[in-house]
Length: 284
Image (cartoon, helix red, strand yellow):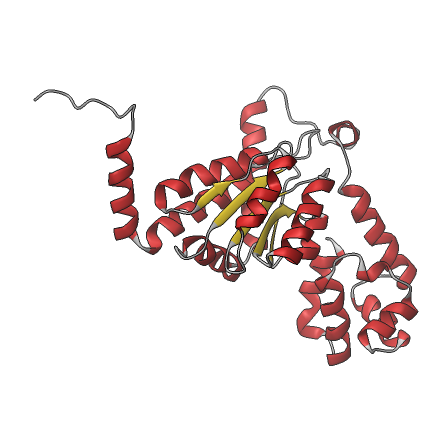
C-alpha cells in the first residue's frame, strides 16, 4: 500500500494532532511529507514526537523509513515498460487471453474498492451540470481517454471542449475558463511535466475546478487538483493497463446521461438528425 492509502486507512484511529498531520500531508502529497521533521512540525503546529508516533501508527520504522517509502513511491511513478518488464509476473502462454482477462477483472474490482461512491458522485455531478464548461486533456498516451470521454459527453450536453495537444493553443483554452468550470486532466506514470505546469496556471489564473484522473502514485497535478481519482494500472506486465480508467469513464458517461435523461434524449435526437453519415432506414 502507498503511504497515502495507509493514512486513509488509519484515519479513524488517529488523534486530533495526528489528523492535522495527515491533513497537511494529503493536501500536498507527497511533497509536504518530504520536508524535515522540524519543518513539518512547524507547518502543522504539532510536536516532532507526535509526528514520530503518527508514522509509527502507519507501520513505519521511524520518520526516515517513512520518507524512504515516499521516495520509493516517487520512483515507482517514473517506471517505464523496460523497468516493469524486469519485475513482471509472466502470463501463461497456453491460455494467455483468458489469463490476462482474469488479471484485468481483478484490476477493475480493485478500482471499485478504491474509488469511493462519494468521489464518483461528486465528479459525475460536476460533469452533468449544464452551467459548467468542461475542458478535457491528457498526456501523450492518456489523451486518448480525454478524447473518448469528450466524444460521449458532447452527445449528452453542450459546453464540452477537448483541448488540443499543442501547448501553443493552451492559452486560448485558459482564457475561456471561469471559476465554475471543470477541467478534467489525465496523467499516468511517467507523468508529463507540461501538464502539471498547465494545471498550476489554471489553478492560479481561472481557479476552475480541476479533476485529475491518475494512478496510485499520483501525478504532480494532484497538488493543484480539487478532486483526485487514483486508479489501479498495474497488470503485472511490462505495460500498464487503462481498463480501470475505461470502466470508470463508462460509468461516468452512463451516470451523467441519466442525470437529466429528458435533456439527454432531446440532444441525442437532435444530434442524430444532424449527422451526415446517419444510417438510412430500411424501406417498409
